[in-house]
Image (cartoon, rainbow, N blue to C red; front, top):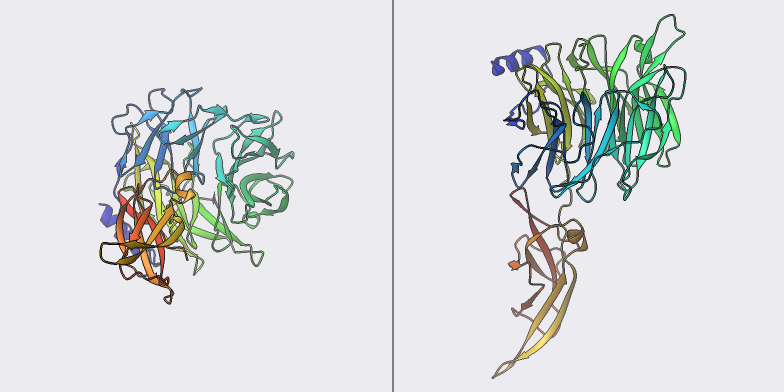
Length: 487
């Protein structure tokens, strides 16, 4: 059935597509009731965290992927509220591989907690300066681990506004809130992205009056690294009509900022080039969807490599992922993710993979996880080589004659200590001083992690002939990774 659907899709679309091989992990297996509203994330250690609303008034459940397997689902501990309609959530990870998690109780509260090494901090309510009013929240993180959150708040009886808040490293809750829109027109559906320069991009739905009819536009704020306003754009102005469900992503490699939204039965996009300071034309993503009463026609766009990927649903509630090719600046063929109707979903770019969590439409609704190969990325540094490699020539004497050894010592890299990286063993590399690079094969392999020295006796003379480098080997999710030699 699924293969036939994909073949028909291939006949309809003429653009090349990427991988369509999916396998599924049933995250909510054994959990009673309707399990919905999933969120997914991954840290630099390759650990994954998934959350979703339980079906039996236990609030938000979670499962943690580490060393190749998912933990049994369990409630997030100490939740202030466990009953109600949960919709939006978002997950990011910081430089210390701690997960930062937000989730909402619709039109009531947003909760924030962190997770690391199997332990949750106590969830707290985000102290919005006005009543939280919305079904979409968004979170991103700056290079110094400062968190940026956006949501919709109702400051007066009628009007809604987009609010941004911040949480610096070491703080326990968000503060320094600012009403970005602050006008007599209602705004909602906010999403945030942080770019390579720590600038902030906030997309949202803005209402425009005085045009003979009410218009809902996709709008975009651009703030600099100091949170000062740089620019404001009415992204979908030329379309008119009612634009809903905005999202935004920033590509650190290309400098493009991608904005997506739904309007008149289809998903649309437009991208801003920071180098040329120009907007592209409005382009269809290639997925059509009716406006559903449960607001479940959300889309989400993320950046990976030089590309973007958008996850969106069709009118029949089938979930598709679409690649925006950074070279051709065109959307490719939509790829079916699951061959049965779905409701809510999340998308996360992780080390060349795209992580997808979604819930089924048929009750009792269930949460599944899948992934596919996305755009290859430059591998993130997970383990670094040893430091302070010191060589001490020593003359040793035997019964008949003396001989030279190089007594080599080193220290574990502070990065590995700070990141709680467990070293499996060290590899020692040797090269002549006249050579420019080390070979690919260790001179001495599998030196125990507890041993921070090695005595080299092969060909050693009083005059120093050799340079040495020491790499560290560690295991992540069942795969051994060796650090790069640093010249």
